[in-house]
Image 1 (cartoon, rainbow, N blue to C red):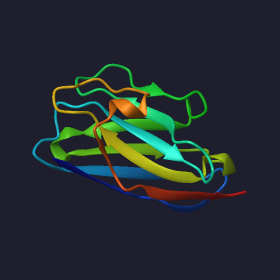
Image 2: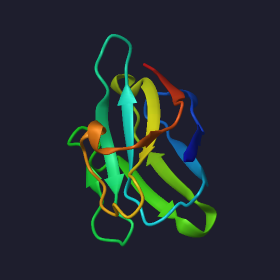
Image 3: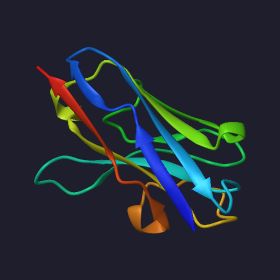
Image 4: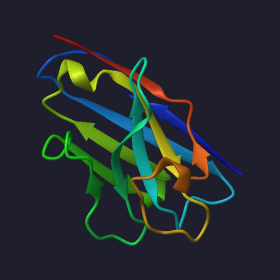
Length: 126
């Protein structure tokens, strides 16, 4: 069993930046694909970014491409989401997710993930 804990959310003005972190604890961190998702009030959970265990190009949703960057530090059991040029539309609860063990590829599909964090709130003022 894994535990995922997100941090780094908060209130920021439009055009600003935040860096989210997700620290994984439990039986093992790797090799697993990892992802970030978000959910705004009254809307479905949507894909933000995903990263593979073994490298390769991360995946991004079109609406964050060029503004957000996902990365991972396996030594620290942590993944990150650097968010730049934030807009009001980025306001949401942000969740990190982990694949089952030995599923090393990230995915844009929420149902592909076995473990989820509790989320961290991001609010962008216009």
